[in-house]
Image (cartoon, rainbow, N blue to C red; front, side, top):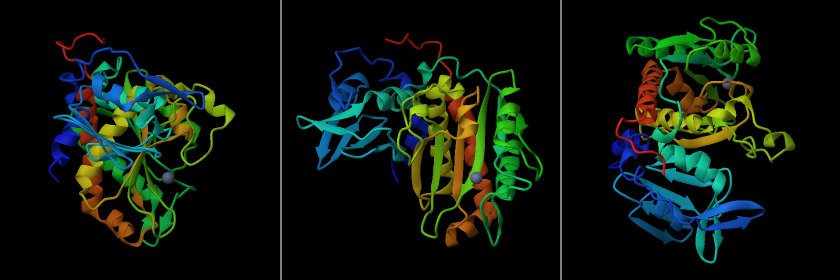
Amino acid sequence: MLRWVPVLALLLGMVAGPAAAASASAWDIKKVNGDDYVSADNIKQFYHFASLTRSGSTVTLENATVLMKLNVGSTDCSMNNVKFVFSKSVEEIDSKAYVSRTDLAKLIDPVLRPRFIKNAGSFNTVVLDPGHGGKDPGATNPYGTEAEYNLKIATLVKAKLVTMGYKVIMTRDSDRFLSLQERVNVANAVTENAIFIAIHFNSGGTGARGIETFTLSPPGVAHYGRGLVEADKIERAGNEHDSANMALATSAHGSVLRALGTNTLDRGIKRARYTVLSGITHPAILLEGGFLSHPYEARLIHNEKYQAALAGGIAAAVTRYRKAVTPQPEAPAKP
Ligand SMILES: [Zn+2]
């Protein structure tokens, strides 16, 4: 795929050019069910997309570095072939597409302008959290347990990161049980700047496959697949890093997709309120590296080549993310 490489190198890398030059113009804001929505035309103008075209329900925005596809009536969005799941559907008003302000501010903006995320780049410590363990095996199949696979991948990621010069802290480095809160406590005991990556594998029927990455739902956004509840409106510890969370997820998700190859199904970057994401005081993501319940993917996950590719993708994403969110000396102030 032609776009694949610039894409991922990019999604996070490109910003200095067109985005830094983004100009503040009058925003065309409409209310839908009480929420603010911004027109795709506004997005085109602000982020300096060269074109905006529409075919059926698909709206395409494009410039030299970014290809963004929105779908009217849907929460599916793609940027440079990486799938994102919006918090709210794209709406149509007077024949024009509108994106919720939440998705613009909490998703599109950090992906397109990572260098504007405050205080995100200055870290050298990575907390890796292999999910489950001990009395909790997580998902299982005839080849092994999720707890084992999670630990194996995290151990491989750690080795790579240490070689790259990072300090790595594991929430567990053996097959032992830790509560979700204990994992949060390990991460939050790290006083220096750090990022947190939870590693899991999925299960759910023999048909489901692919990878997905979760970040904490911003305030007012539901847990994936569940309706909004009152508690979702409350700001959590992790919400202070909403923008960094999204940038980290984009880097990790894109990097892992690229490492695993084009046969891997991209299930997208999604929002969730998992305990490990909502209590963490560092930028945090939870990555699901495939389905143990899928007959073919189960064998892939058991294969050392797949494990090495997945771990390599995660490790590479850390540096990609750090580079993307580190302000460049010449970067102008936010308009
Ligand atoms: Zn799990």
